[in-house]
Amino acid sequence: MTRLLLLSSSNVHGHGYLDHAAAELQDFLGPRRRVLFVPFALHDHAGYTEKVRERLAPLGLTVEQLLAGPEARAQVEAAEAVFVGGGNSFRLLADLYRLGLIEPLRARVVAGTPYIGSSAGTNLAGKTIGTTNDMPIVHPPSFVGLGLLPFNFNPHYLDPDPASTHKGETRDARILEFHELNPQPVLALREPTMLRREGDHLGLRGAAGARLFRRGQAAIELAPGSDLDELLRE
Image (tube, rainbow, N blue to C red; front, side, top):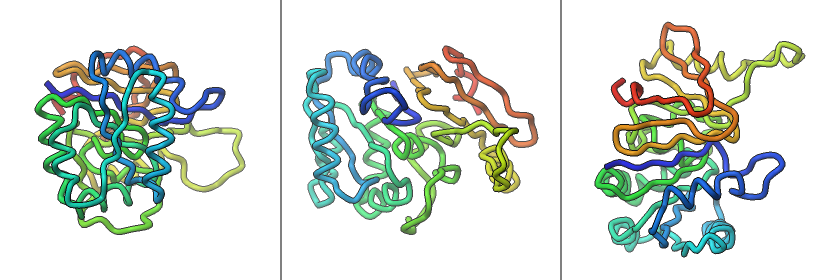
């Protein structure tokens, strides 16, 4: 049974790092106490892992760093749970391809290993990373992600502000451009929204809701607590 907990962000205004998701993390992981952390979305792997380790220790969780070397595949295959941190989605995906970890990680999660993603880690769980907000600071061999869900994400989604004097493209305009060339839906997650999958059930968690964009259709507003099971059949 595929199990996913996908956060729009680890940092939310008015909260400490991962504070808004702590209770959900504990409930999601249940009796599992060891988490393999994937730090590849940032440059300082050791520093990033230590930040996560310090935050999750009070929850009774032990954090192991996924190393960017030949031992990485064995680490993935032995993982009790996986947490893929945020940062730059292109950097993250490039390293996973370089290390040959896309298929082993996907297989592990499909087999039932709990997967936690935040921001870039959430993008990775979708069909492609083509709707990320990040700059392409490196060129992965493909934009195709883990495909744990049949749609794309736009984390940190910001609603259009009619009072803004900014004349650049809104997130909505960017997603419309994506749909001119790509068919899959895009789930835009506001902060601090979370998406949780338990097998065939998919539901929104958190306080801010989301917007669902489908090609050729008006965007749909999704309230916290919405049941999104139908998206698994897209």
